[in-house]
Length: 202
Length: 231
Image (tube, rainbow over all chains, first blue to last red; front, side):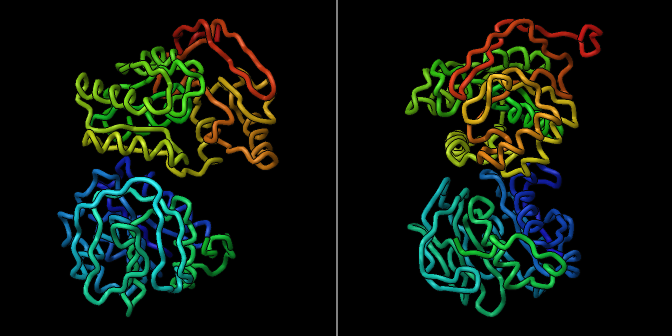
């Protein structure tokens, strides 16, 4: 079971279909089950029963979650694999001592892998879709795995499978979610072969 | 939150409008009339009938014109957004974008320049499930234009029902079209939606078709009661 955390401005918002459901479809396509919960609805409790957690993105103008960081205090204690997407990366950065800085990005951009990793296995570039008002500085002890011209695109905690990605993998880079699930949430994939194309670094 | 819905008259913008009405306050529809049929951003067949759709949905309409020249289209759309905010106090915009990064990115930038929220509730939706939902919820979706192989003239004016969807699925598999027509393979016009107080009856239409390209141009239409026995 994969927990998808909705970071949009309110539970049941119009952002849910745009930022949570596309991730849910990828998870389902990979052969895993999922449940969704809004960040104000105690996701820490639901996280206990899950194999992995994905913190989903939000609309460009939707940065309200940054004012409620205390609602994410369950994250450092959960010990589950985590993939934070855009807004989710910003939360991970702040929790780990990094900063969120104004740095808007809209549209396709070139992402360069700088430190190969189980999800991003080769030093090369790929095109990715971004939609953000802010970017993140690298938290102390975290490793930067990929970058674009102006900021870090991917970082991770070197000791635990906790990743932040600034771009939106649901647009043309579904393999990022697929490889995250395959590498760290294998037990959630049992019983279904899923879509193997989701495992290829494209 | 007061929202304006960018409306071409096609199924994706009308369905997105319905979704927005369930969650927020839709203050108006916004449409841009492109004089150029090859417009990059603005869907053109029957866009003039958005006025009737707005009336059916009991929503005000904000209309502007565009020459449909690629480099000026964004400014034309920007004028429409400014007008919608001035007249109706919108705080955000809803679009029917499904897959087009080109379309979505440009509208996101326009909204950001104006500090408007931007929502794309159909973004990367499951295409088959979406088409089935349209049919199941009673949306009356007519094909208003075809622009790719293998569509023949019989598609012009055809209602998208379960049988049409079966054919579209076959086409999607064999000819690599998108099921929803997001790639511009076909265009639609919505004559009825669950949130319309009346439906649109096509009184007269003309068609033109050649080499897998054709348009169903509605030249006369009117609003009728939904329970009209003449339907």
